[in-house]
Length: 226
Picture 1 (spheres, one colour):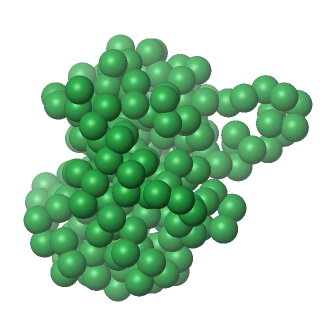
Picture 2 (tube, helix red, strand yellow; picture 1 turned 135 degrees about the vertical axis):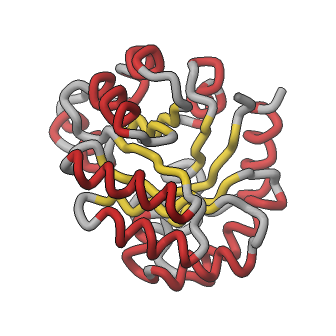
């Protein structure tokens, strides 16, 4: 598939999220993600605001669903989300419920393998349960905890190849990638490129980074599509 560029709006304020999304759309970003901080702060209101402002753009609701899968997916679909995220660590019945809700309400399901011991196996398992995409994810706390203090860097690059080879559905790799690493994701078999913290969103304050955000995003989009 052709590369898709997604911005993760890991913000806590609707106004700032909309302003950042406008800049991203002007820069050529394809998908908008209502990041987990935005969903925690604003809930369905954040998704509805994005849908109203951007009626033609796919919107990913990063719910990180662990239980109550059908209802959560249904609520986000009715608010305007086109994609929802369920965790591989959830019970298989929860994943099945999210997948069913996706079919019933016309949304795609992204399965997130964060903190799984064998991320390739978890990704294949989620594919077998019916998810549409894999989010290959090294979590914020995971990569900034004990391993960071010991000098070891954790990255989705560590086992990306194994995940890509394990599944036949599109893969998205997220978690502390540099701009250059993110740009190279399609060449590594992960065509769904996410630009978020710390590239466009400050990972500690959950606010937009300073500087020429539009210029940065435009350059990233241009290079990915070269």
